[in-house]
Length: 430
Image 1 (tube, one colour):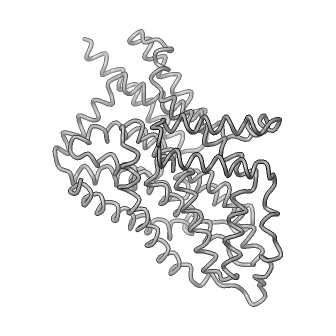
Image 2 (image 1 turned 120 degrees about the vertical axis):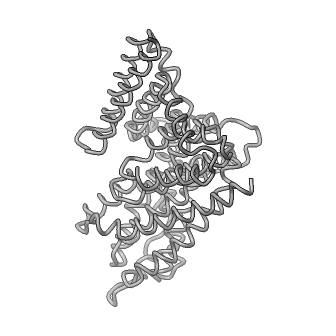
Image 3 (image 1 turned 90 degrees about the vertical axis):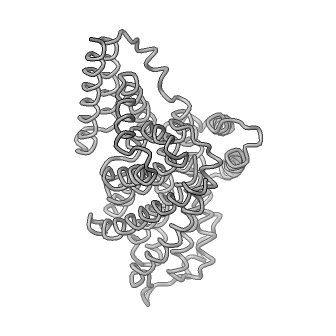
């Protein structure tokens, strides 16, 4: 009788999840509100079915990941408000002497480096408007750069624990060694970057040309120092970013990344003095609460036995076949689930990846590859894509679905093939 009850509760939780995903895709109801409501209903069902109290339910959430995301938002908010990223970008662009292809390389190179340490969403929120301004000053089309930045930001995020929220979710839920993750996936990310640059320059070659009337010398009329809105925050951000990078990459004290980020973020708020309240208001709190609701749904699935059931079913389907395991983890999130935001995809498939780790220890890494690639294949698949699309629409030069997918989809397909081949080689080397 207990088994039937568990099965029935599991079916109900899965139904709630399915309805939630449909509502998120439809975009008719705010996704954060939808996920929080679904989490609350799931918590209520667990209480009625098992007497599982809500306070115990909440303790199952991955609060360290949620706090980490919040801390990184604080760091990015202060750094962005200081003008630090725009300052560095302008310094790089001035060295291109107005050559559109060099400007393209400068932008993409900087986005690649930024995205090793920042999620694609804040990267696009900072670089998107600045890209539009530079292109307007030089009088050439900014749309190729915006689309390319979305792709490069996601590609660069693949090896880094802090590079994207899906990476954080997968690493925490699967227990991946983040140092091994970086070393193992960085070569793939670099190869994808080079291939992307070659193909993007080939595709957009004719559009990356200046008109005869364009005057690139306008860049020299703008002093990079003008980009600095607050010297106090600029130096504060430079010190904070240095500490974060050293803490994440070296990890000399073996301190958890979430603790490092929270210490740095809170210190930045303290030194921001009276501006701290205003900076906190600018944070994307909907992302934080979205994660709360999402982790709640995952916890409900786990408590109802659904996760174990799915893992068992996938293991039976794949067996011990490493090729099937790698293919499943890359192509399901990378192609077939690309219409869904990659954060819930990562959270839902992470327990499956953990189960498949018995086939080969590198299988959880392949989910990171698939989840990041799936984020940019279509324009409404993820928030950074929508930033690019909305910026272009606001400037009167909209990016249509076809404009985006005719570049992103084939390039994403090539990246999926590269990721599959690389993962197979890695599986036999490790």
